[in-house]
Image (cartoon, rainbow, N blue to C red; front, top):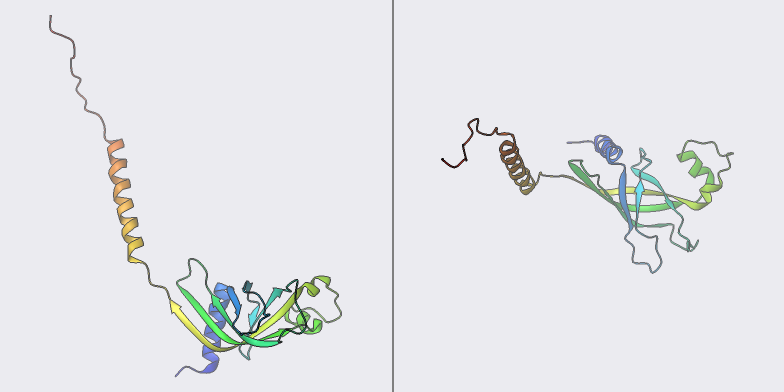
Length: 169
């Protein structure tokens, strides 16, 4: 049986490979954070996927600081994708935000006021391996056959004999 540490390491490796995900608040609240594309900073030892999002213009402090959320990790060209769901927590404490990016708490970054740090506790994760599409391979095979057919037609040499087209006298 696979241990929790091995599962977490597997998720961490796949998330670092893909990096970007679609983040969605899945609560039923009237006001909630908008769905957005995120870039994962890291996944800690407690199983939290951490990332920054832009603070919405109409962000109110009355928003729930914890809510259900999902992350869909996908990158074109990668043969797999991940779907993660869990409880999200918004971090607005400046010192904790600086700690996640590896800076001491005494650094003043005005741009942090425009960001929110979100931690999603992984409660459920699904890993999918993409299968190659048979139709796409058939299309490529057809295209290659046509390319070779027409490229051979252009490169074939003309006959070496000449016809005498002058009328007989």
